[in-house]
Image 1 (cartoon, rainbow, N blue to C red):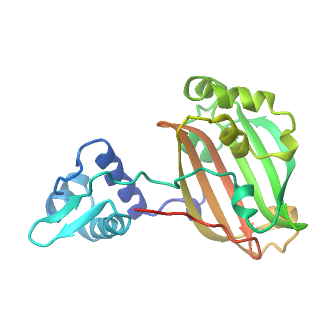
Image 2: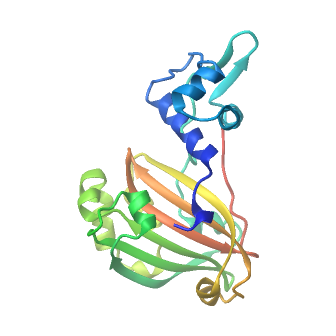
Length: 248
């Protein structure tokens, strides 16, 4: 992994506290330990902890009460978007977005998929690379990986079957296949956004200079606690706006 794609330490700390809240270590209505004690429990510095706590407060998981301290809100929101949608639907709010297959193959795990899909070294993963275009202009280069078949068969067999049976994979994204196969199956997603440059290869695929500014969105989709899909979406300058829905 290149350093630009690594998550900031405060984000990792934020997620550790969120996971502890959802696991019941800090149940709704409870008061968090004092900053010195919590920092010691988590093995982090107080400035890093304070920044993570501020983010948790902004996101509606914590409330601060004078004389009481930080308390965990009742029914804290789950992380991620409320509704997992394919990128072509999000980008297509103003105009239809067409998906064109660049590659549909099986490949060995990379550092990215080993980290996010927990794929063993000798596994074979479905890999789809697609170009998304709106009004004839390249809007995004998407790379998507599915978890190993054995994992999908246990965690989400309908998704595994849909990937094998999709009629026109050259005209759809992997996330669209997952969303279509997930009737009644709750999905959770975590996304990270990074500012970057296209680079030579991606610039050639998108028809832009290598030094074109871009936004890189990495996404991991889970069925329950199991990651079933990981993706990278590269959106160059001039791409349609990507809406983000948040609530508390």
